[in-house]
Image (cartoon, rainbow, N blue to C red; front, side, top):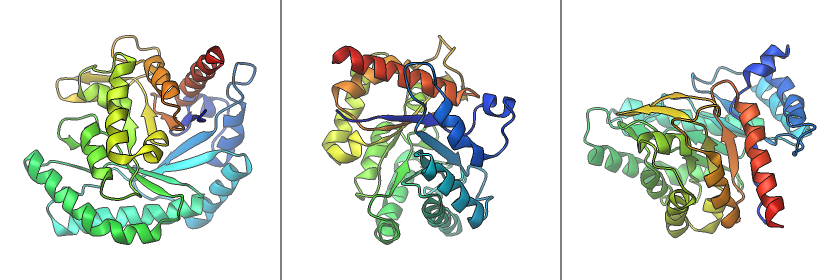
Length: 295
């Protein structure tokens, strides 16, 4: 049976409400989440550099050591400025620079996964934007592969807005370019982009089946997952919600059933609005109870 790990993207509001201030304090706090319930704490954390790499090397090493000491895996999220579909050469160089800097921070943190947004259409047609982006990945990935340790991956993410490149098929197809590309399936984004299409276990199976076909067993079973409920409109994603939402979804239970049936070993990061750790605990509880009921 595969082992699925759970944790938040960033610190919950409750972390700060309890008087904690630094990410150096996060690992011990995460280990206590779920205490007295069905599970024994959280095992993952995703650190976002969304607004840029505003951290020095010494602090990155300290954070990585603290997470390793507490047995919690850490992934990082790239700056939001990356766009490999931008036709301007200078913007291409900047995007590639964000990837290279991210790999340096991965190694400082001791992280194995680097999540990023691959691009958006801008003024180009979707076909032209995807073709440009695909050709650029074919160009730079051989060199990037040499910079990654054997157990490190970079993880393009499925996106939630129409102008962004990142349907689940687009991301899986992109990952066929290199064995070092592993998908990040953001099911909140997928659900928002498709106006609530994730309603049954079979809806998730369809996505994973395509990934198994294109990427094989390892990168599918060990895929990186973002999960949250997201409000959406005509053009897709509007804003992240908490698990209290009962309008937009998606619901975790159907994904959980699919993960168990397929014996997955994914990393699941929660991106709820302010309740990331609490909703991670909920998902882990659901998963462990379903596993126990099958035994």
